[in-house]
Image (tube, protein in one colour):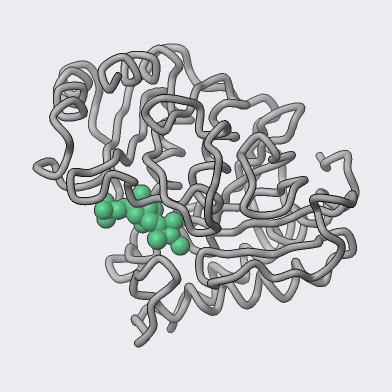
Length: 289
Ligand SMILES: O=P(O)(O)OC[C@H]1O[C@](O)(COP(=O)(O)O)[C@@H](O)[C@@H]1O
Ligand SMILES: [Mg+2]
Ligand SMILES: [Mg+2]
C-alpha cells in the first residue's frame, strides 16, 4: 500500500527503508556524547547518527523544502519554501526514547510531513507516522485517508492492518513525569484513571502510545509544577502523535485544546501531550479546566 502523493510516498519509503538500518546501527552507539540537543538534553551517539542519516536522505528528495529535527537547532532549508510552494517540510524525532538504549528497551522514530513552513500548526500535517523498534520493527502511518500498520524488514514494508482504529473500551494508561511534580488537578485525574485502567509505562512515548493504539486508553505527559510546558516537543512529537491518534478515531489535547490547533512560537517549543480515547481526553480537559 502506497501513499497517493508521490513526494509524500517517497518520504515515507525513505524513512521506512532506513528504519532497519537504524535499528542495526544502534549496536555500538549506545553511549552518551558530550553534547546537548537544542532542548538541553544529553545526546547519545545514536541520536546524532540517526539524525544525519535521515537528514541526508530526506533533504535529497525533490519536493522536500525543509528538514528539521529534535537534534538540530535550526530548520534546514533544502528546496522551495513549503509556505509558498507545493513543497513539504519534514520534522523528525530521529530516536524517541533514546535514554532507553542504555537499558535496551523500546524506542522509536517519529515523523511529520507538513505542507507549511516550520514551525507549523499540527493541522498543516498531511501525513505522520512512527517506527517502533520493539521485538518486531513496525511502522504506524496516518494519512488523510487512513491509519495503517506495517512490519518492516530488510527495506521492505508489509501491511498488517489498513484501517487501524482505537478500541472503544480503554484498557491501559501511562503518564510521564514524577508524581510529586504533577499539578494537583492532574494528580486527581490520574487517581481516577488508576482505579479504572492498567498501568503501561516504558519511558519512550512511541512504545507507550502504541500500547494505547493497540488496547485503547490514554497516554499523557502533563505540564509539571517545575515545567508547566511539559517535556515533549510540539513539532517533532506532539503534532505527529496527535495527528495519528485523531486519525485513528481518538483525541489529542494540550490540556485544553487539540494539539493540532496549538499555535507554535518556536521550532523547539514544548507542550503537554495527552492522547487517547475521546471520552478520557474530554474528562481530562474538564478536570484541568
Ligand atoms: O523519563 P521521563 O521523564 O518519563 O520521559 C519520558 C519521555 O521522554 C522522551 O524520552 C523524550 O523523547 P526523546 O528521547 O526523543 O528526547 C519520550 O519518549 C518519553 O515519553
Ligand atoms: Mg522523543
Ligand atoms: Mg529523540
